Every structure is written in C-alpha cells, then in structure tokens.
Length: 214
Ligand code: ADP
Ligand code: ADP
Ligand code: ADP
Image (cartoon, rainbow, N blue to C red; front, side, top):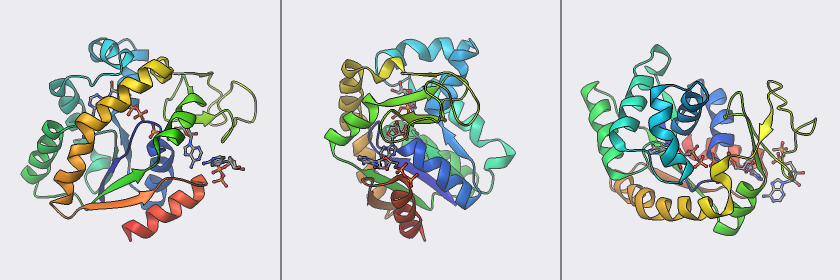
C-alpha cells in the first residue's frame, strides 16, 4: 500500500507509523527523521534544513522534495510506503503525484489523524526523542522509558527537541493550519482521505487506523 499520514505536530504520526509500517510490511518514511539524521551527521542537507526546523518553518520545497524522492527511489519503497510528514503543502503534494504518475502508480489512502489542539500541546510538551534515532519517541507521562533519559529501543540519550518548545510549537501549528491542512481538501477531492480520531491509547488508535485502511 502507498499511504500518506497527515495530522498536526504531536498528533502521534510517528508513533502510529512505526506500528502501521510493521503491520503492513512497508517502510516508514519520515522527512522529519531524515532531516534530523542529516543534521546529526552534519551533512550539507542537514545544514540547509537546520535553521528552518529550529524556527518551526518548512524547509524549502526544492530541498525537501529532492530528499523525499531520493528515499522513494530506494528498493524497499517500490511496492509501498507510509509517508509521515510529507507532503506538507500543495507544491509537495503535486510533486508527489507527478513522481508516482511517472512510475504508473498512485496513492491508496491519506490517513488523517484528528486530535484537539489541547491534546497536541500536552503530547509535545512531554515528548522525549532519542538522539541516535529520532523515530524512537517517548512521553514523560504517557509513554515513559524504562530507565529515565534512556531510549528503550537502542540505549540512546533522550532529549527534548529544540522545536518542541512552547513558542516553536505555536509556530508549527500555525504553519500546519496554513500550509498543510489545505492538502487534506486536495486529497478529499481525489476520494483518498480517511479521518480517524487519534485520541485514546496508542494501541486503540492503531486498531482504528487498520480498520479504516482495510
Ligand atoms: P512533527 O512530527 O512534530 O510534525 P516533523 O519531525 O515531521 O515534526 O518535522 C519537524 C520539522 O522538519 C518541521 O517543522 C519542518 O521544519 C521540517 N520538515 C519535516 N518535513 C517537512 C516537509 N515535508 N517539508 C518541509 N519541512 C519539513
Ligand atoms: P508526531 O509524529 O505526529 O509529531 P509523535 O508520534 O511523536 O507525534 O507523538 C507525540 C508525543 O505524543 C510523543 O511523546 C508520543 O509518545 C505521544 N503519543 C503518541 N501517541 C499517543 C497516544 N495515543 N496517547 C498519548 N500520547 C501519545
Ligand atoms: P499501550 O501500550 O497499551 O498502547 P499506551 O502507550 O497508549 O498503552 O498508554 C500507556 C499509558 O499512558 C496508559 O496507562 C494511559 O493511562 C496513558 N495514556 C495513554 N494515552 C493517553 C491520553 N491520551 N491521555 C492521558 N493518558 C494517556
């Protein structure tokens, strides 16, 4: 299956994507994780992205689309993928459509995670992220690691993302409403959108998503 996951920052996209990718045997592709890996490795791409991410703004489309297409070109993405955090605006959505159309394939679904802003704020405020692999995330209250400050999955150090500060989260939510939400209508017009509530236990949301995608 070829799936796009959308929802505000902190909705639980990364958390759900990890479970769904496993259940559906498709790779989880997160542009946020790809950027953070590039930043920690000090690559030129990381250097280009860093300032935008720190400010809660979108990284320029040219850079982002090239990185996403590079990842989609990999062998493991040929029979399906779960895209998390891409596309994030109209230009990126159209670029993805064109990329897929050139290869004679198309999206199967756009899974829209709905969650009230008050919950998003709580989720982001308590989020802790692994320095070694930013797809490993925890929550101080909802999903505490077994040992404080240490990633259960890989032993990496947990930290609070700089862009998870209250001020930058507000900026990211504003960018989400302005730039990203409109692509839900774009995909609705194509009949691709399934909306589910992202409230409740992680496992309940995963089940809801599996039912919606079936
Ligand atoms: P969250 O999961 O909290 O929504 P992400 O990890 O997806 O956050 O994104 C973090 C930051 O990375 C964004 O605020 C943005 O600066 C950058 N980024 C990630 N994906 C994209 C994208 N598709 N287009 C532009 N910038 C992106
Ligand atoms: P996104 O990728 O959409 O930004 P994450 O998956 O990183 O969101 O989740 C944000 C925070 O909320 C993380 O700390 C995560 O552990 C927590 N979280 C995710 N899903 C749930 C849930 N169903 N209930 C409570 N907390 C959750
Ligand atoms: P599971 O691993 O069974 O899916 P979760 O990781 O979703 O469970 O939840 C772990 C704990 O976090 C639960 O005991 C629950 O009390 C708490 N929790 C999960 N989601 C929320 C939420 N949205 N609001 C408040 N507490 C939550």
